[in-house]
Image (tube, rainbow, N blue to C red; front, side, top):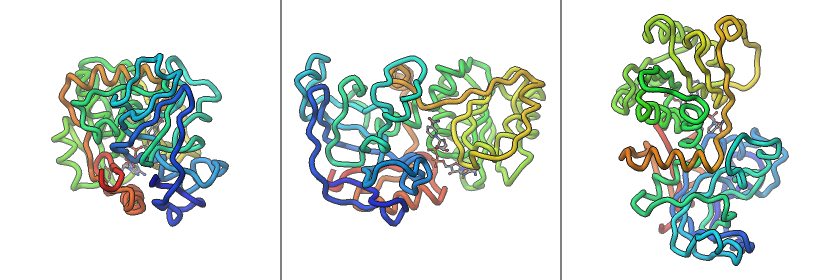
Length: 339
Ligand SMILES: NC(=O)c1ccc[n+]([C@@H]2O[C@H](COP(=O)([O-])OP(=O)(O)OC[C@H]3O[C@@H](n4cnc5c(N)ncnc54)[C@H](OP(=O)(O)O)[C@@H]3O)[C@@H](O)[C@H]2O)c1
């Protein structure tokens, strides 16, 4: 089968290549992949910046939607059938509750083989059925970016109707954040560093969209939220934007620490968090039950993920370059050639 693999760390080593077909174990199903989506993590994994000890060569990718073409003997007891459409969850075996210290060792696309391949094996307890009415491209956007935004705002964040949520940038997680906050009845203040994206953030449902060009936007957001600040921040920037998030959030509010686009290490003044009873909540995607809860909320809503572009596997390197450029708005998808 064809797969997108990194042979040695570095984007120049991201190639579409022939690999052996996987064989499902008794507790696994075999999927024919219909669609995949990229996450920022894939970029970090390919560059060796996520974990330089990941085994190589490595098939990349965490998110896909596929059709079951074979069911292992034990997997048959779960009710999964040939022809069912499913998405594998990002963390194999994480069904519900908080993560454990071994959770990070069971993630797809490093250290486990990824899903950017024509065929994928997945453990039967670690797939979520999706209806055929859901476009496979849309479904492939959900497992990481969608589930993470839902975890941050709903499962862990308990955002309520009338709350004000701050989102940062226009990547996959943040755009799901705007849509999910809207579903929960919250008002969204969005930011972007790219003036051309502002109108699209408003069209997606943000009530305000600030074009930011550096430090200082936290105070503007606080004022826009009525003076005390926003109830919740979906913080995808990390160290580079956390001071702004701390300035923007109201006393007693929550900052969901999701990403590190603007850096993961560096000095930070934590006094605002202490003095204003802030809750800093780390968010690591979510278990299968959170994916199921997202689907229950998402499917009746009629919402669609924002898909920036779709590339065939044979142009995977171009897709990775596009993600690295930061010019995208929403999700970048991959499909097997000819699919
Ligand atoms: N914790 C988890 O479980 C989890 C799950 C998924 C993702 N993540 C993390 O969350 C972050 C976002 O992921 P993603 O997949 O949504 O990324 P993405 O799609 O690559 O988002 C990129 C967008 O973010 C904005 N951005 C980029 N660099 C920035 C910076 N230095 N400061 C402010 N904004 C910046 C840009 O939007 P504008 O042009 O609009 O500014 C850019 O288009 C990543 O760090 C990722 O690793 C974590």
